[in-house]
Amino acid sequence: MTLYAYSLLSILGINIMLATSLNLISGFCGQFSLGHGAFYGAGAYAAALCAVAGYPVPVALLVGALVGGALGFVVGFASVRLREDFLVVTTIGVSFLFVGFVRKQKWLGAEMGISKIPASGLGPEGNAIMILLFAAATIALCLYLNRSWLGFAFRAVGDDEQAARTIAIPVSTYKLLAFTIGTAVAGLAGGLYTYFTQFIVPDSFTFILSVTLMAMVVIGGLGSTWGVVIAAIILTLLPEAFRFINDYRLLIYGGVLMLVMRFAPGGLAGIATSVTRRLRKA
Amino acid sequence: MYYVDLFLNGLIFGSMYALMAIGLTLVYGLLRILHISHAAVYALGAFITVIVANATGSIALGMLVAVVVSAIFGMGVYRVLYQPMLRYPPYVAMIASIGLLIFMEDAFRIIFGEQGLTFTRNPYPTQIHNLFGITINTVQIAMIVLSTICLVALALFTTRTRMGIAWRATVSNPTIATSFGVDAIKVRYLNFMIGSALAALAGGLIALLNNFVEPTMGFVVSYKALAIIVLGGLGSMRGTLIAALALGLVESFGTIWVGSYLDRDALAFLFLIIVLMVRPQGLTGAHA
Image (cartoon, rainbow over all chains, first blue to last red; front, top):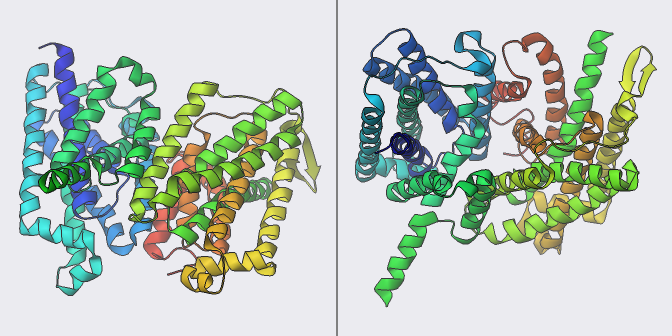
């Protein structure tokens, strides 16, 4: 396989991790977050600082996940206190605040970012395999959570908070838990990204990225792990497959988002369910 | 006088934020939709102002056309995009709205180029006046005057006219308003028409002030406007106005005091997050 194929696989793995972890927060638990890129960025920066300071790869990745999760835990408190629409706007704010803060910090390299990050020592092939393994682990985690008691509780909170509260589900705890798990995975993905590019800038973690991730989740179908994985694969590979699409990437993203919401608000998963239902009837 | 200038500057930006945010808050109050693509209407207004002004030589005509076209466009967005989505959970319309914003911004970039457009003849931002020791340019005066006129007219309209009262009634309780004979559909169109017209006016004025429009001009403003309506307590017009002016001032002074630690654009959200942590219902918290 060529170097290009390895880098594509790496990006694909990272996007799958980010999209499925966002699905955990927004799809399972119903907490809309448009700031997922910030947690990813926090993880990337934390891992980069560790790597530059000479710590080994597992430590840097762990720190990335911890920082992402810690930030997510703090933002999760907002989801406990605020109502739904306030939360969306607050997470948008987190995304702008993160980039605005990092841009001005000299110790984080300001606009220039952090470069000369030491290699993981695995080579491009090893890196891609590591990332894909983590992506597979994330998918497995989501599938497992979906069947577990925790997944049931998340869904109960997402479906109807009041009802969940009346059957004695501690809503706040589960919201915080969903945020922390999801953002820790995003932080881990950030650490992997750091080793993949060995060079990070604030502009890699902007609001547009957060919107792109949300696009993967809603196009895949909120709450459906496989739907989200497929949407992440399509939205990552499509611009690569057709170069001319790259120039109009945002135009197409925007258009697809509108059309999916207008005609199939359940996303790919919703389409799949209605098709199988129709087939069964026939 | 330096601080007075800063204060005035903050109020001027605040008044533009108010024109932007009123439309958003009205849509939210009526339909519970976060109308993020409102920023695209603002950018549309700015682009039309520049294009028509350059073609005809009259900036006033440019703004008029911008306001009318954007008002129609806003109603179109409701009819084509939002109306069929009202039966779904609110996030559906919100995501579609983000899609429309991204779509239109990229369309502006493709049509008008990444560099954006400038007015061929626009002497106003450089006409500096000195009033009681305060330096202010013609566009800024126009901003103060026009936003005051619009907001007062809006206040009078919503309190004194039949249509305006019907509108407020629908915002506070659609079912009861409808049973009293209010045409809820007409109110919705009116809502999008007025909100979009105000956003287009703000877009045109900002274009005049900067003598420049670019495809991404609405992007940051749209999220600031969202922050404003949340600060104002979502759906409250008075709260929105207070929050808009407060944000203008916070930005104006904040850039001087903490500008070396944080972007100007990020300040709005720091302000938002701090306020929400203390008062989760927003600054005024009119609607629960």
